[in-house]
Amino acid sequence: MEVTGEGSDIKESIQGKENTAEQDKLSQMRALLECRDPSTKQEVDDMTLRRFLRARDLDVEKAGAMFLKYLKWRKTFIPDGYVSEAEIQNELSQNKAFVGGNDKKGRPILVVLARRHFQNTTPGGSDEFKRFAAYFLDKICTRMPLGQEKFCAIGDLQGWGYSNSDIRGYLGALSILQDCYPERLGKLFIVHAPRIFMAVWKIIYPFIDDNTKTKIVFVEKRQLTPTMLEDIDESQLPDIYGGKLPLKPIQVA
Image 1 (tube, one colour):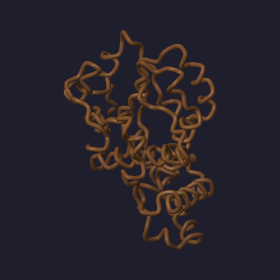
Image 2 (cartoon, one colour):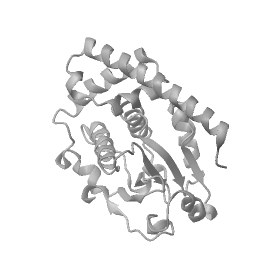
Image 3 (cartoon, helix red, strand yellow):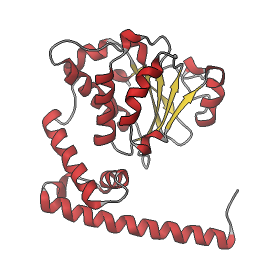
Image 4 (cartoon, helix red, strand yellow):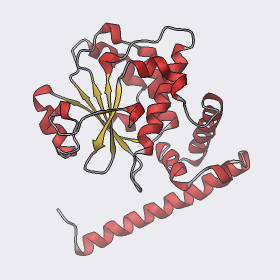
C-alpha cells in the first residue's frame, strides 16, 4: 500500500534522520581509519565503508577493525589485487559456478552446482578454494549495475552426496563472504536440498551471522519455479529452473 500525506512525510523524516546518522558514523569511521592506516584515504570509497558499517550495526570501532582486517587479508591473500585463473585451475575445472541474468531488483545472479564440488586435497588446496571463492565474488560484484551493491545466489544441491561434503571449505567460503564482502549477499535460494545435507547444515548454521540468515530461503521442489519467478523475471531466470536464460560459466561471463 502506498503511503501518502502525513504518513509519507513521517517516513521521509525517519529516513532522513537515519541517513544523517549513517553519514555521521561514516565520517567518524573514515577519520578512525585514516588515523590507523593513512593509505585508506586514497583506497576506499564511501559505499564500501557503508557496507562494513552496516555489517556492524553502525558501530564505528567494530566496523573499522573489520575493515582493517579485510585490507590486511586482501593485501596478503590477493597481493596482485585479483585472483588469476592460473591460481585456481583445479576449482575452475569442476565447472561449478555460473552466472544468470539479474533479478527484479537488478541484482546479478550467481548459481553454484554443489554436486560438482569436491574437496581439494592437494597441497595448498584449501587456499585454492578460498581464492576461488574470492574470484567468483569479485566476478559477480563487477556485474552489478550502477547503484546496486548486492547479488542474488542460487545454491543448487541436486545430486549432492557425502562425496561432495566439504565442511572446512564451506566455512572458509562463508567466512570470506561475511568478513570480506559484507552486505553483498542480497538473497540466497537453496534448491534441491537432499535430506542428508541437513546434517551438514546443522554444523554450518551456527557460523552464519544473524543478518545473513534472514537472506537464506530453502525452496521446495514443487514450488521451485513459482518461487523463483517472484524475484526473477522469466527472461532472466536460468533455464534449468524454468526460465529462458542459459547459464554461463563464471570464468567466461
